[in-house]
Image 1 (cartoon, rainbow, N blue to C red):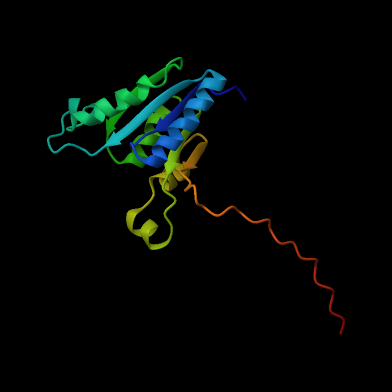
Image 2: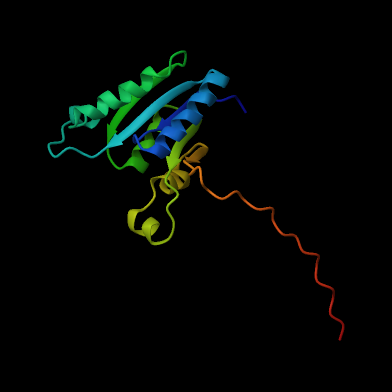
Length: 158
């Protein structure tokens, strides 16, 4: 197995995305691999081929450029693409021959997860390369407790 050459980091400018970018940046800096920053945006109403890579909101391109400015010393590229985020992320990772996808997750569960769906879950199920999800943790989150290990039950004799 050859070492990783390219990491795709999906960004949506949320807190979870920022945590994922920080992780991907450390990984790229420590290993010397190329980092691809990808953002999927809503399909514009008047779709032409040029619109596929040009969001209607110009601040999206500016936000992505600002993110890549903080990556000095790392080979990086920015990619904007219209379409459903999960599909865009998986396709870009395969198209750009990425060895790893890093993305944030909001950690929704239950009804909120069912109603809103999960881009991270879609990517984990459909990506053709490994996926690392990074969840922004609250500073007041309760630490995990050590698992309770009980001795095996004694055999029952009849």
